Length: 370
Image: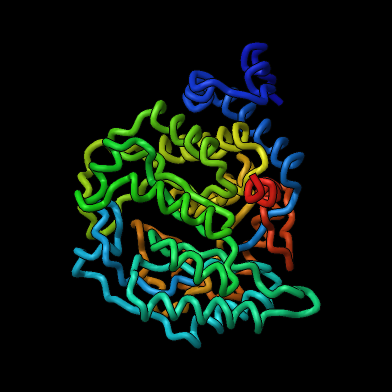
C-alpha cells in the first residue's frame, strides 16, 4: 500500500482547508497520490457517516420541462424527446415497492413545472406515500426527497407539509459566468440561491450539487463550488460528471476524455468529503455511464448514497439527461440484488429500512432556533 509524502499526509489530515489546499487536492495526478486521497476520504466517511450506503429509490415522474437549460437532454427545446408524465397510481406504486424492498427512502424527480396541477400531484403523492408506507420496519413511512427544480416559497412549504423532508436543487456551478453560459438568459444564479434559502426556511434538509468537467470549468471553479456548499451549510450533495446529452445545445469542444472526467469526478467526491465531512454524498448513475463500476468507485471515494431507478421501464428511455444512461432495461428486483452485491464489493453494506439522513442534518434544529 502506497504511503503519501509527508506534505500530502499533512494536508489530508487537516480538518480545515484553504482554497489553495482544495485546488491542490483536486489537481493530484499521480496514481499513488490519488489512492492516498481515496483512502483518506473512505476512512473519513466511515468515521463521520458510518459504514452503510443508503438507497434512494428514484422515481422520474415526468420529462416535461418548462426550462431550456443548454446541457439537458429533456430541455423544452429538444423536440426529439417523447414526453410523458406518470399517473398518481404509478408514482405511488413505485414508492411503495421501494418501502417493501427495504429501501427506506425514495426520490421524486421530474422536469421543472410550476402549474397547479403538477404541484397538487406532487403534494398528493407525497402525502399518500408517507401514509401508506408506514410499517413495523418504517414506522414513519418512507423518507421522501424531492428534486423538482426551482419553485415558489409557498410551493416548498406545501410539499414540506405533505411529508417530504429532503430537497435536492443542483446549482450546476457557482461561477456566475459559467452558469450564464449553460443556461438561457432568463435563468439567473441569484434565483437559484434564493430557492435554496427558501427550502431551508420551509424546513427541508437541503441538497445541491454541480456538474464536473463542464467546458471552460477550472479547478478553481470546483474549489469555489465546494466552498459554496460549506458556506450555505448544505446537508447533502448530488454531483456528477458532465456528459453531453442527445439534443442538447452545448458545444462539444472542451469536453474531457472519459478517463480524465472519471478521475476528476472521483477526486471531487473525495475532496468534498474531506471538506464537508458529515454530509451525504451520492454516487450518481452518471459515474456508471463512464465505467461499469462507476458507482462503486464513487462509494470508495467517499460517497454514501446511491439512487437505483424505480421508473417504469417503458418510459425510462425518455428520461435521459445525458447520453449513455445505464440500467434502462433493468427490472427493479434485478437492480436491488445487483446493486447490493456491488455495494458489498466496496466493503460497505446497505442501510436497509433507514431514511439515511446525514449526521450534518441533525444540526437543523439548532439552525432553526438560531
